[in-house]
Image (cartoon, rainbow, N blue to C red; front, side, top):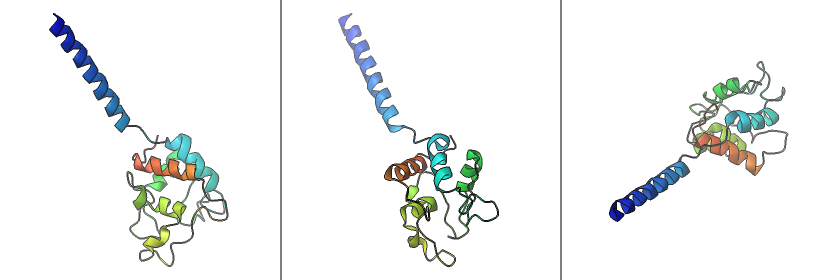
Length: 144
């Protein structure tokens, strides 16, 4: 009887450890609609930048989160072969390169120039904002 009770307690302890360690590994990234889209809307979707369908410098960032998400999953028209966002890989994402100012590493693929660090003519995104976008991409760039 004591042996059975001991096995039951040990089994429950193993289940608790297994559940807690698996949930630690699957922590979701920031929400696109609640975290990432507001950053992009405030810093990128100005009419003079990426907020105009007619003149958007290569990527149109409208007000609709679903439309912005769809646009981010396309290829850049200026950096041939580069995706704006590569889900799971922020370092390969042209969006992160533009935000971090490392876009020159794609100079061989850019038509003319890869341009400047973004956002242009505004304060750079804060470390927290850049980290949120990076974490969202790393977590799979979900439209959530």
